[in-house]
Length: 104
Length: 193
Image 1 (cartoon, chains in turn orange, green):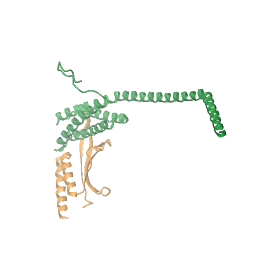
Image 2: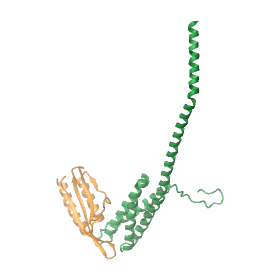
Image 3: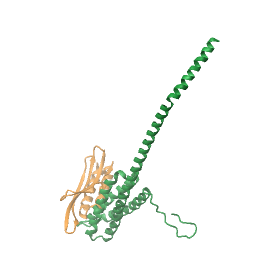
Image 4: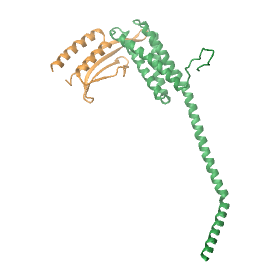
């Protein structure tokens, strides 16, 4: 299962000054790092308009030896930061991955 | 007997020569010793002045840097509380003010890095990261599609800002030797200041 990965992306608006809003893209990722020998769960954001980075080190990457543990952490991260429709999508993908994990 | 007489004679001559040399070179030796002592004294004086100047500069810098850092920490902690209490409505002026303080804190940390002891730099750095995290979560929460879980995340971050604020102020007072002891209100027994 080492090469399995997940990624979910969504956009959100924010206002810095009244009447001026920007859009940033938030991305959740689960991937296997061959150099670390672990699964990495991370959440990052970037402002597509200004190039400003969000969450540079704000949510630290989480490392896991077991894929199933990484899947659970990924779901927790989604529930914390993603909107409801993305959470539903993540839950569906996690259920599928868990089934594959159980069958492998 | 002859041998003894020669020996005594040689010893006498040696003593006379030695005394003569000492007499002749005594002022020279004393002058050299004096010069050496004066040089050492000058070195010690210079080292003392340099250290004194360094400490004075350190105190001057600290007295300029610490209050502005603590002000940013204090104000941003209070604004974070206020912003949280106004959720779900978005408060643009306060949000901008919080951003300004978070930025001032970041810049202040860069400027003060050299003069901040590790035990103070660490919680200040943590506070700065928590402030950035707060901005991230606040913008998500007040955005058009907030996550149901981000409210709890924001509350945790506000709690972290509170804890770190207390720690930063306490450590800064320790570093600057500011007494936090309260004056006793008792009329007997004296104060505990």
